[in-house]
Structure formats: structure tokens, C-alpha cells
Amino acid sequence: MKLNLGCGVNRKPGYVNVDREAAASPDLVVDLERLPWPWPADSVDAVVMEHVLEHLGRDTDTYLGIFRELYRVCRDGAEIRIVVPHPRHDVFLNDPTHVRAVTRESLELFSLAKNREWAASGAANTQLARFLGIDFEIVSAMQRPSEPWLSRYARAEIDAQALADAARHFNNVIEEITVVLRALKPAP
Image (cartoon, rainbow, N blue to C red):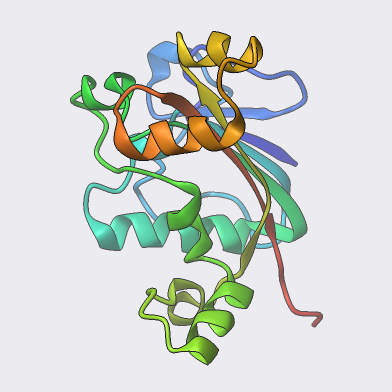
């Protein structure tokens, strides 16, 4: 089974399209903040969450519960594609329904390998994978610049380092972040 969680009007063929709002005409109406979710453990091969995660989990316990549920329903090796607005872009800042900033670095907190690496080095990063009993590795991460940064980069007026430096210092440089996670589950 493949899930398109928080699909809104962006239905995907081959997926169970899920949304809280019946007006979006999803295949299944589910409030993702009400736990547990209706799918059995280890039943999901792929998940898409495009512009939904930033709307979920105003309360930290709810947000962490969503990741526990995501891990529970995913099979070993399931891939989760998360697309969110960059938290320092007006797209994120101007929408009052955005309750949580999501970054590549915040998603690393759910990686057991990263948690072990931090523990070994004495880093203070919160070891959410260990605390929650879950494990997601980051398969890939991309950032999509907004204009005029995208065009400047495409014309080689700035390089990747200059773009990264600008993103650290200015708002509205990176518009969107896409991270693909993989669920890692121990053999039974």
C-alpha cells in the first residue's frame, strides 16, 4: 500500500489519498493528528507528505506521535517523501496554519545511526530515534531556491557555496525542502 497523506486536491494514482477534509474528496478521511492511524503495522511501502507536515503537531507530543505512527505503519525499507516550505521563506511565514518548521536537520533526529554518532561524540542533539524506538535514515535531501536565486544559480552567477551562504543569512532564498526518508526496522 502507498499513502498520499494530507493530499488536499493533489490526488496521486496508485496511492490511497488521505486528507482530514472531506471537501478535498480523498479516498479516506483521516485526521493525522488523531492517533493511532487506521492502517496495520508494517503495511505501507511508500508515503508522500507534500506540504502537510508543517501543518501537523503544534503540540510536541502530537508531532512525535505522528512519527511513531509513521514508523509503525511502514514496512522495513519503506520510503517517505516529505516536501515542506523552508521555515525562513514567506511561503512558510505567511500561512497561519503552519505550526511547525521542518528541516533536513530536524528529520535527522529520527535516525538511529545519527543518534549513536552524536552520543559517541558527546553532541547535545536530541536523540529522538532512541527515545521513540524508531529509525529513519535520510536517503536524499534537496532544497529548491526561489527567484531570483534560482536563475542566478542557473546562469552560474553564484555557485552552490554562495547560495548556501545566502540561505544562512537571508530570508526567501530557499523556498522548498524535499527530504526522502527510509524506514529501517530490525529483522524479526
